[in-house]
Length: 174
Image (tube, rainbow, N blue to C red; front, side, top):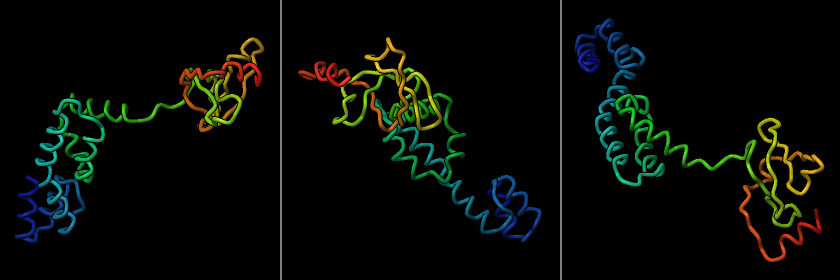
């Protein structure tokens, strides 16, 4: 319908048809904007097909989806509306799974610098202090109730590493 109004508006030079086409196509009521939007929408069937093909492959990852989706980023809202609920939920799940985990309350952590004495120590994030800082309660200080403030980038997730002598060094330094 929008494409038909676009053609009608260009042939008749009719302002009302131009405005109607702009409303239906979701663009500005200028011939250039309408032509650009119509060109975008011509890609829609191919975009939906390509994205559905990628999502249907077993073991599809966020990178697989993103490689195709980048090509159609300008019409994301349009193709998103054409996908099924299951497909959009899959895309959302793939995106979440691709994100690195975030250190937050309850995370078991260690210090990120391998040359720091707490590199082999285990602690738990007990409080968030804004976007970048957290309080950590180290296992070896739990009886004292001692908590220390750290920037998130100073910490890493606890790996459960037990290198030879690591526990001995922990006892000496802590």
